[in-house]
Length: 479
Ligand code: BGC
Ligand code: MG
Image (cartoon, rainbow, N blue to C red; front, side):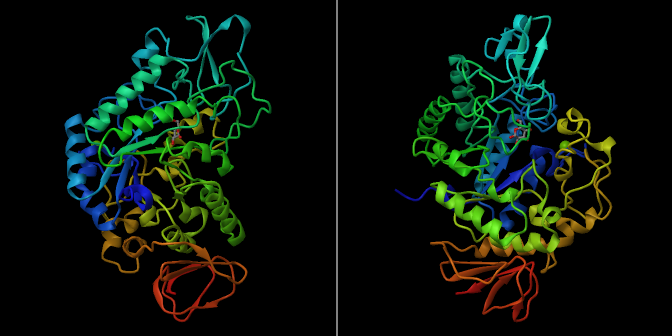
């Protein structure tokens, strides 16, 4: 059997609202993406992941879906989707879509209707348990009119479905088939570890602070029955030709808790967020790589997505370039987030511009995720409308400005994707503060914080170097 395409693919996440706007309303759309496919082709990515573009009231910008089998008019139509998928496939780019099975919008007909598909508890005995919402406050909202509490691990406008209910299971199988029949190459599964809740709704043993992405909860998520869902989905996807892929957002601080989701008959891939949480520190990065490789049958590599701070800000602009060479030399699939290839920084938006429910639900205590979602700059001259304001200087980071500059971050990504090494991975001895490993014929050296280091024949470097590699720089060397 041929090796599946996704085993070492470069995936590129498109946060649809913020990628490319074709109609000038300040919001990215499907036709905008189609128009920019040649850019993605030139960048060299193998697949795109589209964040939710389904009809949605937009409380969580599409992660509150009110119809799973249509396109929000703000983003286009089903015909636009078909045109996008066809054009991508023409260029050899696969398309995966985001499926949001943990919760719907509170405007979904299942919720405005009889709510039989949701986790609800009669209100007589008060708040059902101690589960917190990821975004502050209790996970339960009282609906006085209906006389019940309903569960929402996220915002109150995102009620959680009850995956112990068989209708939910069969509805989602129909939804998956709808998109597979339209030719999608797979799914990114939102909150994949969360669907099934403890059936008795028992308290979390240790009520933990509600912090997304380091969730160590035991009852509200990660129940054994969730694995049956993915076994069913695996079979369903396998009935289609072309290695359709299931990518789970399975968020635990310990990769050993992710491993069961990657059994051969379950998800094909899961995001490995361990690098997202590391500081720019050689030991921490090395340990996190080792822990991931030891725990997981296949490891994906991620530095950015639409939920976390940009690395040009987290690590620094030079370090972000070095991190790109680290990322693209590691063994296995890589997920890039739009704008990472431009070195976009996190934007410090004025409070009045912030839209993320995290900001509003925590009364500004957590700034939320708008800063990594500012629309991409395509041209030096910025458009007049943009759903989040583009800061001064944004045009200098644009695709137009970087395309013709051989030293730009964009050029670095283009070269790194084209020259990406394959083959087996092994660490090399390296001085303190330095990471070095071999992949077929190439050695990747990242000088995180060590002394200046002599290097041999440089194939690609994160900055112009002569014979030595300073701290904050990385290079691929002929082994
Ligand atoms: C998505 C977030 C979203 C949340 C609720 C996450 O995992 O990546 O952007 O807010 O799920 O759907
Ligand atoms: Mg638009």
